[in-house]
Each structure stands twice: as C-alpha cells, then as structure tokens.
Image (cartoon, rainbow, N blue to C red; front, side, top):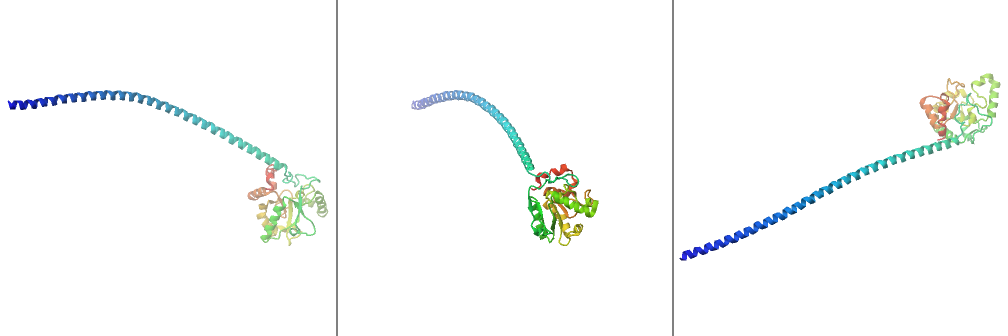
Length: 300
C-alpha cells in the first residue's frame, strides 16, 4: 500500500509537469504564431515601402537625367556664345588693327617707297617732311652741310657707328638733294659727259636723293672716285650688313636704269631690306604693289 501511495504521488507529479509543459508549449506556439503574423504584416508593409522607395529612386533618377540634359544643353549654349564672343572680339581686333594700320599709313609719306628712277616723278615742290643735319664727322666733305630724312638718321647713324667699330672708313659723300640741286647737278654732268650723263645721273624729279632717304658713300682713300668704291672693304661690309639697318643697293650690276653704282644706297626699312637681301633680289625687281605692302613698317 505504501508502495502504491509512493508511485501514485510520482505519477501525479509527472502528470502535473506534463500538463504544465503542454500549457507552456501551447503558449509558446501561440506566441510564435502571433509574432510570425506580426512579422508577416511588417514585411508586407516593408515590401510596400520598398516599392514606394523604388518608385522614388526611379523618379529622382529621371529628374537627374533631365537636369543633366539641361546642363549639357546650357553648356553647349554657353560654348556657342563664347565662340560668338571670341569671333566678335577677333573681328573688333582686326577692325581696330586695320584702323591702326590705315591711321599709320595716313601719317607716312607715301612717296618714300616709290620707284623713281625713270619711273615715277617727284615734282619741284616735294621736300621731306622733316630733315636733320648730318654730323660732319660722318661726311667726306667737311665744308658742305649734308641732310637726311629725320626718321632715317637713327638707322644711318647706327650703321656708320657699327661700321667704324668694325674698322671701316665709311663716309657720306652725298645725301638729300633738292629738285633744284639735282637739276643743277644734271646740267653740269650733261655739259661734261653729254648724253652719257643719263647712264649715271637722274633727271630732276627722278632722283632717289630728293626723298632724303638715300646716301652716296665713299672712303677717305676713294674720295670722288666713286666707281673705285666697289673694290673697298667698306663696300663689302655694306653688302653684308646694310640690310640690318634698312638700306639696300639701288643700282646693282646689269640693272636696267643706270650704270652699276656701288656707292648709292637707299633706305627702304629693315623688313623690306632683309627680304631683298635674303632672296638675293633688288628693290626694282619687285612690283610697286609688293613694295607698297612694306610702307606701313618702313620705320619699325
């Protein structure tokens, strides 16, 4: 009986434990189901929110693409306007440059680069707009004043000084001659040489000396024997260097105007003189149209 009572208590206890365990497990199962349902609902909500987020991202991406397109179009428009502005600036610059050239040309004596030798004529009233006297230390005849175009003198003086520094004895025998002076000179030559004077002396109005840009050179040893100048070191020096100072030999050997005049050099500007030197040609080889292009830069 005691044994039965002992085991019955054990069974009762086990029954209670089993009942309590079943209740606990049932509660946990219920709880898990509820939490699962809540989780499903939340996931469903999140799914909707995710769909809404995707729509928002798509909208924003499309808006960004539109903004990018607008930006590119604006950039293209800006570049077009910049190009127009640059074009207009260049046009204005060209116009200003043209105006500047025209103004400069209007202030430059148009006679200075004309081909006068038996081609163009300078009337008796023409005098260079400004003459300056040459220092007698540069002249052969110390008793006669020599004059040169004022704008040519700095180039001529520099050339004479540089030649002296190179050991040359370069002197000026003749420079500016007026219409009247040339007329008298030609008459004197004509009396002495007759028609032969036309081979080495220009008629009045056709002499480059009247421009005030031309000089005849000699040396202490050559003096008035001008043909002998071609055999001097000074002539060789001029041939190699005169273009650097804007001077060119007017009448080389076999020219179509006068005899070879190694002593007669004309200022035409550094740019033109350099071209003549580098190309191995002479002033009268060019057309007047070509020569005129250098007038604006003659004193640059």
